[in-house]
Every structure is written in C-alpha cells, then in structure tokens.
Amino acid sequence: MLNRLGALSFDNAKFNNRLAYLINFASVLILIYCAVHYVARNWFTVNRVIIEGDIYHVTPVQLTYIAQNRLYGTFFTLDIAGLKSAFQEIPWVDEVNVKRHFPHTIIVHINEYKAIAKIGDEDMLAENGEIFDGADDGLNLPVFYVSTAKATIALAKYRQIESVLVQHGDSVTKLWLTSPLITKFSTKNNLNVEICSSDLTDGLARLNLYWNKLYLLNPKLNSINLCYKNALAINYESSVFIKKKTESTVQTKGVH
Image (tube, rainbow, N blue to C red; front, side, top):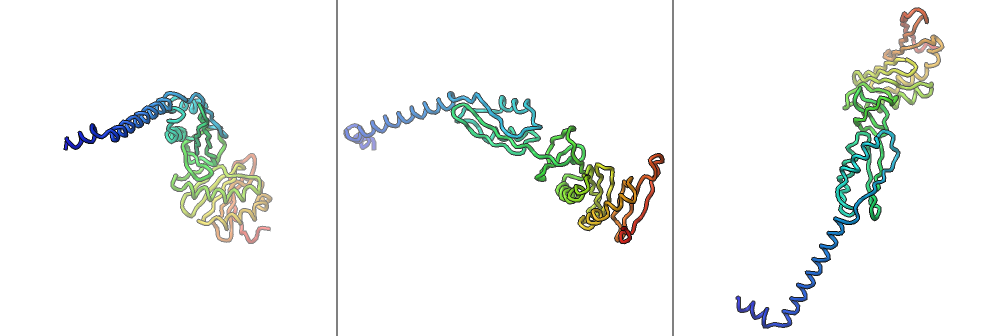
C-alpha cells in the first residue's frame, strides 16, 4: 500500500502538480475566509442606533440601557433576534423591528401597546386583548375588576356598553363581571348600572331607550337595575341637602 502511495505522489508529476494547485487554492480560500471573518468581526462596528416609532411610555433610560448593554456583535454579526427580544422585555413594547443600515447604523422601530383599560391595580389591557405589565398612574383608563382569564370577555362587554354610553355623553369608569350572568359598571357621570344577563344586548337596548326619560324623572339619577323582566329599578338622591337614597321600581311599559 505504501509503495502505491509513493508511486502516486513521487513518480507522477502531473498528479503532484494538481495536488499542489489544490493545496494552494485551499490555502487562498482559507486566507480569504480568515480575512473576511476578521473584517466582519472587527470592522464595521455599530456606532449608531436609531429608535423610531410613536413612543409615549417607554423611557429613554430603558432604550439607552438596551442599546448600550444588549447590542452584541458588529454590523454583520449582530444578533438581531437577541436585540429584538431585549427590547420586547420592556413592558410597554408590543412589536419590534430591527434592520441594518450600512455601514454602522441599526434602526429599531418600536410599536407600543395601545392600552384600553386596567385590570385591577396591576395589569394593563391592550386594544388587541393582550395583557401586559405597564402600570401608569397618569393614565385615565377604565378599571376592569375581573381575573386575567376573563379580560377578553370584559373587553367585549365594555365595547358593547361604550357603544350606548357614547350616545349620551358618558363612558365607563369601572366594570365588574360578578358572575357569567351579571354585569355591573359605573360611569364618569356617577351612574351605576346592573344587568343580569349573559347577553347585554337586551339590557343595553332598554338602557338606551329609557335613558333620557329616566333622567327627566330625576336628574339626580345614580343607579339603574335592569335585572327585572318588564321593569327597572332606579336610585336617586332625593335632595341636594339630604343624602337619603330613594329607590323606585318603574314598569318599563309605562315609561313615556
């Protein structure tokens, strides 16, 4: 076997020349690879990070920290997925898009969550139904007193209720789902409403129908109970000086 290899490598000049060319070619490729690898890892450093988007709650401190401490690699070796993940750890960040701009710039586009309500005292609910931890005491948002598991149901009911209240210049401030059949809510005009039905359609239709008539009966109306089949109960302050609550049950068929 050794004799055959010797014959091939030392007695065959043509073969030896081809082998030498192959070795030289491989050496050049290795040198080129090493040069490219060196340039890619040591040149074209990222020295500029541009952050875009409608940003209202994410602070400059949070963005600067990530840009300075979580950006690994050069323009070509940057871990884009890792950088996106780092920005998405910020509570108010919904979506992140990262792209390179040759030769030294990274552009980060951030979309924040659009908060629509608070869930209790801790979590926030976005318009898309996602729950996130982004407490902000400066936001004037309705509060849903529900578990996070029922947040999507509460959001759907909230939108139904708002579609009626907006017609009367009012809006929800607090919402409770005390059972699958009972929905309670308070409004910015200090009206408390209770509807005992899993489907709000009928109760809200009656509320909308008799809204103006009930306020004509008593402008100090502060509570409406729509849990009766053909009637509704209302509470109101009987005097601006005497804080006595008066309750009336009104047959809806007889309200004109």
